[in-house]
Length: 361
Image (cartoon, rainbow, N blue to C red):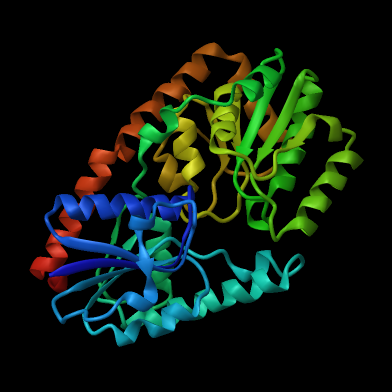
C-alpha cells in the first residue's frame, strides 16, 4: 500500500509546504511507502523531496491519496481520476470578498478555491482540518464524511537557528517593538494593527510597529497601508520588511515585545504558535481560527477597537506579573503543538482511517 500526498504547489518555507514535508516523515515512520507530488515544486527544495504530478500514476484501490486544499486550482477537479481512497487536509481558503478591491486574480483564485471545496464534498472519504473553525466551515458547506481536527505539524528545531545579527542590533535600541508576521493581505487587516499602534504610540511614543511579510500580488494594498500610516503621522515608525530571509524573520521574533494580530480570517495562523515558541506575548482579535490556535492563551480581544487594543497592549507591557502569566500560559499551550504530539495525532487518525474505523463515524 502506498500513501501519497498531492498539492498544486510545494513551496519552500511556507506553513503548508513545511506541513507536507513533515507529514512525509511521519508516514515513513509508520512504515508506509510514500511520496509527495506537486504541479509546481520550489527549486530551493532538494530534488528528492517531491515529484511532478504528471508522474503520479498506478494508484490502486487500497492506496491512500492525501490532498492538501488551500487555494484555487484545476488540480482539485482532477481528483476523481485517482481510483483510491482519498483524504483531504483542509487548510482553509481566504474568502474572495477580502480581495475584490485590490486584486482581480486573487479574487478569481479564491472563488475557484471555494468551487473546488464544494466539488470535493462527496469525493473525499475523510478530512483532517487544521482547526475547529475549518471543520465548522466544511460542515456548513454540506460535508458529511468523517472530519477530525489535526493542527499543522511544525518542526520547531528550525526556529533554533541563529537570527540575523544586523537586524537584532538595529532594533535593539530601547524602543518597544510591536510586530505582526504574515503576508500583506486584506484579510490580515494590517490597517487595524496600524490603528492600534497609532493609539498605543500616544501612550508610549518610544515605540515602533514592524509588519513582517511579503506584499507580492498585493502591492495596491501595501501602498494604501503606507499612505495610511503617513496620514496618521506615524509613517517613520511603521516598518514594512517585505520578503526577507528566514534568519531575519527569526530576528524580528527575538526583538519583539508583543505580537499584535487583528486578522479577520485565519485557518490556523502559524505565527501565533511561533510567538509562543519565542516567548512573545500575544494580543489578538477573536476571529476565525484565532481562539482555536490560542487555546485559552494570549490576550484575546472581543473587539477590534484600536483604543481598547492599545490599552491592552500597554497593560501587557507595563504589568510584569501579567506579562509573565500570559507568556507562561502560551508556553503551556505550545506543548499541544509539539512535533511529537501532533505527529501522534496524525498517525492515529491515519491508522484508524486505513483500518476502516473512520467509516463508522
